[in-house]
Length: 329
Ligand SMILES: Cc1cc2nc3c(=O)[nH]c(=O)nc-3n(C[C@H](O)[C@H](O)[C@H](O)COP(=O)(O)O)c2cc1C
Image (cartoon, rainbow, N blue to C red; front, side):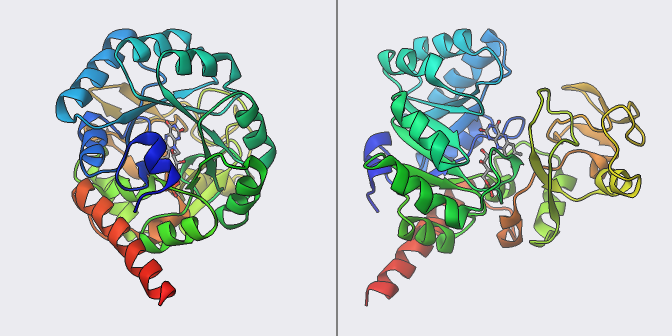
């Protein structure tokens, strides 16, 4: 399946493994790229040494293109320079206006993507020179930029950006989602939650088991519960005891939430983890894993088993091709 996104990114299948801070490392990104999709590292909080180490490790595992995701809520000039020096072929920006860094990224040789949640922001991104728009519906797991669902968002963005390739994100987890996204005018998909059930992802086994057991009713969109580190940062997570207790307390604001400051887990990699902190549950965490921020999108209902990432890419691609062939008969 060769789409405009495949051509622009020089990949074989129009499937991007979404950036997922704290869950994606070189193994997963490289596995997706080796399978013909695009793997993405989320390095927007990394120090220079670790950023370069992750990029080099990914490159040692794949000769194919991969991306690095940078969150514009934080200063990213130095990380972008390091990525360009390391020859990262694709840069993905998200959250705030990427215009201060787009021309530098392109002059440094990168293809530039930006994630938006509505058509107006998509047009602004086109005006500032990005190469590909990622349109994220509010079904998505993790940080959610907009409040529009994927089904109406994709046509609105496609209509707003002319010839610019659009990648659809949010609630896409199998071949049906890829076929639907292509039908809506996107030329690729950006998938997070399904890859949380890959063998290469770096998350706690209990979090992964809860994802496998979850239905489409088990996630919740929160304006401001977990402390993501910057204001106005809505997110979608699996509903858990932390969410339930906060709701039962009348949804109080930060400073008055039940159990605030309580240490509920520890991990060698990050130390003590307090209730409402926003880290992805890591493999080495010990404690009340269920009470941590377990990011997930509504598409979690389509996630049934843990598989190698390459198998996930193949299944989604072949599933979509079969549907599109059947519809064309
Ligand atoms: C665990 C997790 C962490 C995420 N971290 C990031 C991130 O660091 N940067 C980003 O742009 N998006 C992040 N997202 C959002 C994803 O990139 C993507 O938009 C979303 O997963 C797509 O929806 P889906 O989960 O329904 O596939 C994260 C999502 C999840 C589930």
